[in-house]
Length: 330
Ligand code: MLT
Image 1: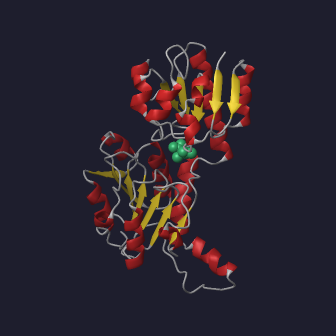
Image 2: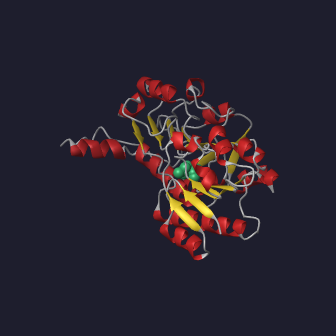
């Protein structure tokens, strides 16, 4: 039976599932030094969320000739905190749970969009300060506006369905998407990121972080936005990122808020997490944000835990797990 380290938490029901199958589950958070010293080499598998960074050094130190890690489970979607090539070179399988948090991230994205255009954070702050700023907090509707997607995968498509119901027009850039998927959702696919920025007043980010997408959202692209809705309303420009920090250049966003080129920016993810008060963007009155809580719902965590427990049980019973990220290892 396997020894499994769970370093960033996991739903209690999922831990019970593993224990019922006879596996030993150790819940512990390890500091970077301990990870680099090979603390994980005592385990057959490790389950992480985004807080634990499984770098080249950490994975190399966790794999021995005849013992050590066989499987890395990413309880969530993004695998940018795992050095995939080192895992593959050491024969360590990496699995994730790609569909389990979709609905939660969709709902958070829509929440941020609505909060932006209806000044919900500013309204709350003014009430707390004993002010009644009714006349200053006039907003705009999402209906009649163009929503641009950078990446149009599972989560973006879910956001798109809600946005259509709200009366928005959909535009997207996604070089990996089959054209019929966008067509079926009434979404216009563009051949460049710039074109999406030119056409849309509201942008939402749904791609992975990679060398190619680092600071994809920058001063030049934000500058292409017109601030005028498809319905002719001067609604300003709005940006939401619930995907990954680092895709958005936060300094560029701060400057665009200062000049008014962006009317609002809402981030759930940051280039440096945890984001702290010395990130000046957080202090701007037209910014609002959340601390990387896209998948932090009871429902998503229960689904993620269940899916991860199933993956581990399958693997240690000699079956191929459902969601393998580095199939070369199989
Ligand atoms: C994910 O990639 O699954 C989400 O960003 C959630 C997380 O990392 O905790």
